[in-house]
Image (tube, rainbow, N blue to C red; front, side, top):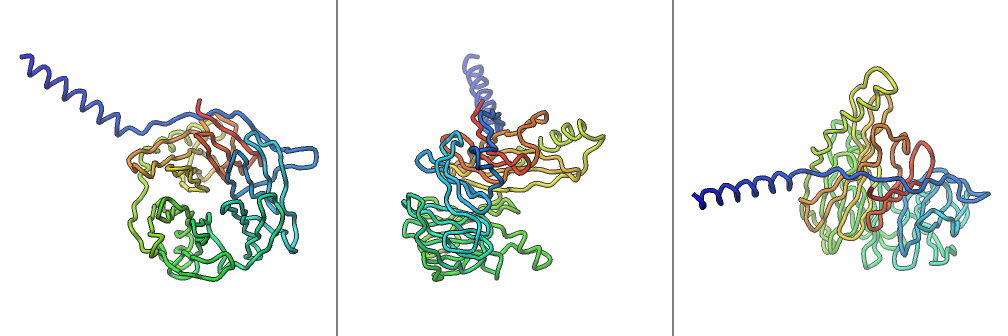
Length: 330
């Protein structure tokens, strides 16, 4: 009798553990800082990329680069609008290699190079217009995603010379649809290049040694099926009904073993729900979801345009309020 009871208890514990293991927990975030004016003469506009290094946040903001501390106190401004050396039409993406800052000047398809103190050093032409975040390996080689051609990833040196063109174009019924389906954020993780497809939510792993595709998998976000309910609830406050909704990834960020990316769902009436997904690259079964806006929240009206993360502190830019926002776990 005792043996049967023990077996029953063991089976129950294993069943409950398995259920809890499969459940993806939604973790609430709390807003601790919101900034739209950095000082008397510097207003924040919008950003498509930010990164954090040594507790300094570097923000691509329109036609300049902002350096702030973790509370968005302004430290330095790099660049200005224009077409001259060190100037920008628009700062698209930026990345550090050691103490050198590289920033993409989108309209002119060039890379501006700055020293650690923000002094302009030089620039060079890019081999193509980028789509999504760029990456750089420990040899100083860049990886850029573009929609031109059937191989959307270009590897090039820090003078613009192309080393290789590789990758996989995600097919659509038309050429323009194929390009929209192949928008990649690129990240370096150990000895691999990670390509996150922002339209299809697919992760690809490439070897840095020979740039061959190692594996590909769809990111399982079925645990986010509460989006529709949240949208309907939020929409009910504003209008009488909610229409169909779509999901999109606006930005991603690699912090150690964890890849973070935003997921925004919008219905036809323009109502948005935002969450941040955290993938453990060392254990792909470990997924955490951070809720950045509840149905009644008014911190963020639209979608996250850029994101960086340090020790589960989230620094984001909002498309509607044109603010820099800082979130921590509640």
